[in-house]
Length: 276
Image (cartoon, rainbow, N blue to C red; front, side):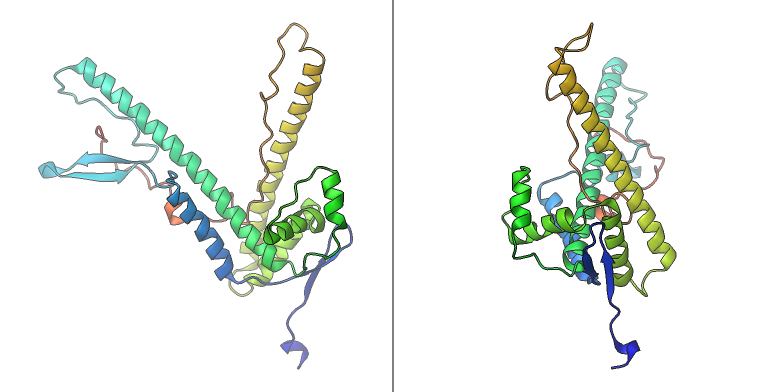
């Protein structure tokens, strides 16, 4: 076999000096992981599709259209028999529309994060060419630190990868970037991969800053409670501040690429929404 026929060997050395083989991952696995998450959201009845409103067309036909941010406000009928009641009903429907839209946006964000995390997990599980070690010293060490160790073998290996192999921000970034490069080699331009990694890096840094800020706030609250509350003020309940759960998004934005079902809808169509 000639040098050109040999598969390219890609390795990285982690912050702690571990040599890690990095492999290409079939897009089939990544796409299936993301699609499975979207299907779960649908089955749970999550509001990943935008709410709709009715429009009376010529001839009295009623058709449904997806809401966007420009169609949430409902105006009362100008020739209503009871203008006050019509105005109150329009305000109530507007409030309902805004609540439904907010629920949709929140569900879409959760979907993006979950799809992203699923894609990233597929890349790391299949792209990190290391097997879970037979030596369980690391498990005993983590349990002494009160770290919860997953029982499921796949979950345990992923936990090991993200806690014992890729121990730093740079480790994670390097692994994702190289796996992305070898996976999409020939399919994506280098500048496209670089742009995706810039977004991925920004999302991780922003998320890390939020977690750090919340942790610092919680520490301050604990000190304040231990001292009996701030001078001249009241104590703070122990659950007043919560540290957000960290997640690992995927390269390609907050969601590592949105699904069609998560689309927010297009621009306003200029039609006047009526009471649903």
